[in-house]
Amino acid sequence: MVNMQEVRRVAKDLGLKTGGISKMKIIHSIQRREGNFDCFASAVTGECDQSMCRWREDCFSAAKKLHS
Image 1 (cartoon, rainbow, N blue to C red):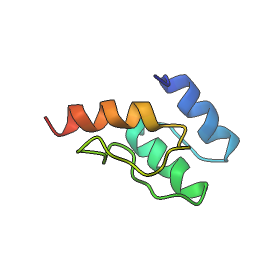
Image 2 (cartoon, rainbow, N blue to C red):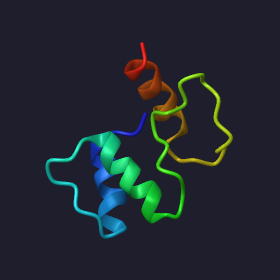
Image 3 (tube, rainbow, N blue to C red):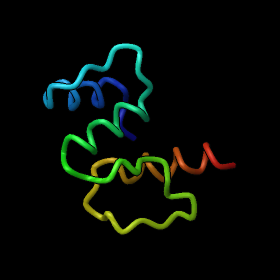
């Protein structure tokens, strides 16, 4: 699982501000900045075709928590 410090580091490297923003919203911003869909935590059924996504494992866990 990727911790918040790592998420913030990635965001900073991409020039994104992270103050007062949730992990999910920061990851969405990172995904958009990288030219990807901002789909973090949306894999409700446990299925995702983005096999190379750096957030994949966290995404499944977060989706399960949000939609249970």
